[in-house]
Amino acid sequence: MKPSVATLPSQAASTSSASTPLGRLAKGGPSLFSGSVRPAAVSAAALSAVLLSGRVARVARVARRPRGLKAQAAAASLILDDGWDDEPEANEQVPLSKRAPLLIDGRIIIPPKSFRVTSPATGSLVGVAPDASADMIEAAVTAAHRAAPGWAQLRHTERASVLMSCADTLRSNLEALATLQTNESGRPISETRIEVMVAAATFENAARFLDINQEKVISEDEEKKVVVRRTPLGVVAVIAPWNAPIVLGWKPTATALACGNAVVLKPAPQTPLTTLRIGELLRPILPRGVLNVVVGSDAVSLRPGEILTNHDLVRKVVFTGSTAIGSKVMEACANNFKRVLLELGGNDPAIVREDADIEKTAEGLFKGAFFNNGQTCCAAKRIYVQEKIYDAFVEAFCKRARMAVLGNGLSATTELGPLASAVQLKHVTELVEDARRKGGRVLCGGGATAGPPGDVSSNTGLFYLPTIVVDVAEGTRIVDEEQFGPVVPVMPYKDDEEAILRANSTKYGLGASIWSENLEKANEIANRLKAGTVWVNKHCEFIRNAPFGGIDSSGIGRAGDLGDQDLSQYTEIRTLCLAKVPPKLPPAIASLKRCPEVHLEERARSMLQRLFRRIRPTEWHQLEQGAEDLSCCRD
Image (cartoon, rainbow, N blue to C red):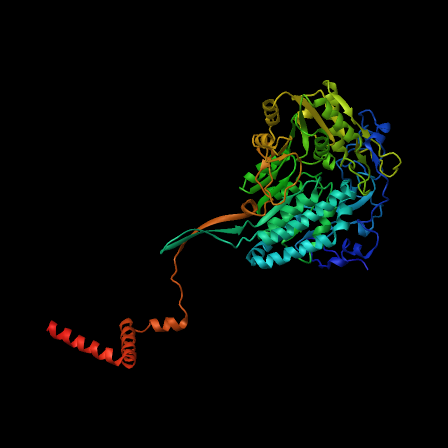
């Protein structure tokens, strides 16, 4: 029996998670989570035999067709493909288990239109994503707006219980979600597992620490009490990128929910399937409309992200992506004064001092520069090495890069998977070729490969060897721009002052690192680097419960500390000057207060006198006699 699905705007039957197209996958049938054959990964050195001399491979990719291009353009030497594909052909039979749904107002929605998502490693179909219409996105925002007041009015403990259940659900589906994410993004499964674990931990810790019901007392006297209280914003739109969709989509979503907001989450169309699946898993846990997950084609006049950023009911936009798009998001949000949290591009410098341990630094910077194939906002993108150790470091760095293991991300030994799309491949290739034209030398890597030798399934042409470029300087694109790929320039410097000056000479300011055995000096230099996060002898290491964000063109706002920064980002602060209300007395005492005060005093005095007369009769007689004598004297 086919699962029932809802359509908009007509009536829709809500279904349980187990009966939905993706929910049935846990029962063991063909699914988005089914891992393909796990090919053996191979080292970058072995791949050099099939290096295409810096030119992009012209590879036929039947299952991964370019989107939005004319037929004649598809025959060009470079397939211009942004990582997601056209709507399935009318005669193409796509299993229902491969069709991902939207989540709108607590209902599973499979719209008439869809688009294919294929693996950047193999080119095979991973799943079919729903193409939400403008009306569907409007319905999602309206549903969130309708659900927000009820969710905000819950006690902290009630919201926390719901979010704890969300964390448990993510952990119980860890392997399936990590596999799906690896299939659609190409990232090694060791990294996508971490993504799921971080998302689950955020749900749990946000539930524990983000209590918006706590108030801060500013001052208090007999007449008034001044307090600061927090209230949710309302509807928060989270626009997540394609490079780390689980962490960068669900981490802000969990935080916004913990602060009492309703959320509309929009993943990137290149990697939407895991986010859609998580939305489906969380649907039975969260109240209707509190969480909505939508995605749609960008090949329209008004893109889904533009609808959200321009919508009057959306009160905050959380965007992670390029600086160019972030600027447009900020401009759109300014029209009705939406609040924004922007994590944008970076061109992170790393400074290697002459006293650094060369081998350890080469290993550490390989991980810091090539993590997720360099497709990470805070990856090391410019390396400055003190000239006395420059040659030795470059040799050690290239040696480590040549040892890198490329392959399908499902292989346990894979270090680097493919680039996410031909758009990224084109960008990286252009930067390397520009460096060559301007006198730069490529010491290792420097081009794309059809795929790891011996792995006939991973032949999309999106594998790019880790590349190290020397003899370049500022003014070259590869130094000035964010590469967002497995390419990094290494440049010499004379002294610390020069290194600091060059490191800070950028419009970006997301991350930076300093490498040295002189920890006192390293800490001093770290404090002078212009970046939102600075590491000593590390790079691109995410720090739990620390605020993260950029300076200048790298973004606006800080988040991720599960404390003051997150509360400030996802709530409104109100100052209340309250009148001091007299305390209410218990009923028994309140009834006594209605008696005349003098009557109470007389009764008490009489009782004490009788008690004293009974206990100390002699003293009482003397007291009475003394009172009479005193009275006579007065007379």
